[in-house]
Image (cartoon, rainbow over all chains, first blue to last red; front, top):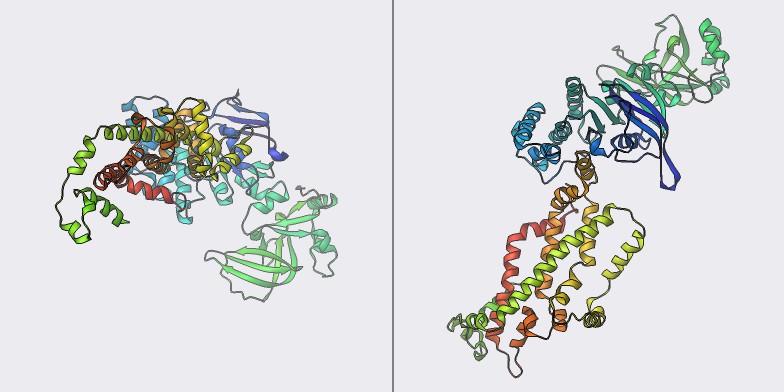
Length: 359
Length: 253
């Protein structure tokens, strides 16, 4: 089922605007992730699609059919909540069977379907258990089972993994993704966790302050952020930012600005003419040696901290009294307070204008 | 806590217990069920017992259903005048029941409800305390349960009866038992609102064993023992739920 939103706006009482003019399109079978910090409106948007919240203005289409006035139960959706929302007084069987019972299915059919689902989610031995006897991961699977029992056309996930511990979260992430691949149902997934968004999403919608910042594939979001918010929100460690103003005031002969003017080749000269205010570069595009032909020397910089992660090392260094970082997977030996040469890969620089939009 | 119960049982099993001047004599004297026989045989005891049971059951059912409904509305719905409504409920909670004794009596007289079951049941079928109890409990029940049920296709009343009421069972059990006990033991208002034998409840009826000249201790204690019995049985059955309900919401699940 295709989902199309047109000009959705929503404010809560006291005039606080939650969503501003949201328009987007989700294709049939697509896994779409709403990503943003808490309070950005992503959950509200999901609840509007579910029908649990009423939009102030705008139109919601499911396959070109306007469904604004439909009750949640008539939208043919399945939803998984952050706190599982399992019915505590019912056992696993009855939890999964609840939507089927409500819709008046025959008893044998319900039993057959519940058995099929319980096998699918790997909880066939737990049908008699009450939710509180299950672990967090099992509860989330039951919630999943309940959501798929009516074979909905759209799945809605509201931060379903955020109550699980890190290891279980990774495992469930894989399971959810496989489930999506097997069922091929259109899924909308809300999260503030960029790793979940990057690993699961076919399409990521980045939201901030109720406004869509960017819609794109994980690759586009990471490599080609459309504005400063997306650039800084996605990526860990955070993208390195340099203001051109502060660089101008710097007497250092190896300042970034001078190097930019000296070294830039033709295509970047155009960008420079449109007065960029900020320059950003991801930590993996900073090196200790001039690895790439278009490298910019940033001078000798002092190492503040070293985070050794095993497969990679994140080194934080000082630049203009600010903390910048780079990532390397070379096994090199560095010490704190040591001075190191810093080179930027010029091809990977991202420029932003004074409205924080990418040039 | 045990001693008064023991004392009551002991006295009820003796013929003319007031004759014994010391404790040892009382204990070793003959046990008898005569007092119970007499109490059960007396003309009006079964009427009192029936009245007490009828009133307590209806008041309890009323409380569970209506307090649940009002409490739910307060916890979940927004309506005009909600703030005034809630603060007036809380306000009523602090009024001692003795203050409303005379106004309520006059109201009953005006409605011609004196000496009817109405006066024994209707003023108590919904209480601010019960509303408050349910309301606070429901505030701790995650709203996602209802949202999940809405998405699963349930209508409002189905959600109310299939999800909300079963989930609230611990607090409803507490409310039910509390109301039942309160009513079963209630003396003042049934005493005020009835003067005919056929509408007297047990606690009121028992006071008539306190005769004009003397007190028939044996019969009084036998009657009291019988009237305490349902409460003890109730408590034994629902012990677990009572404790669970009392601490509901205070522990993280």
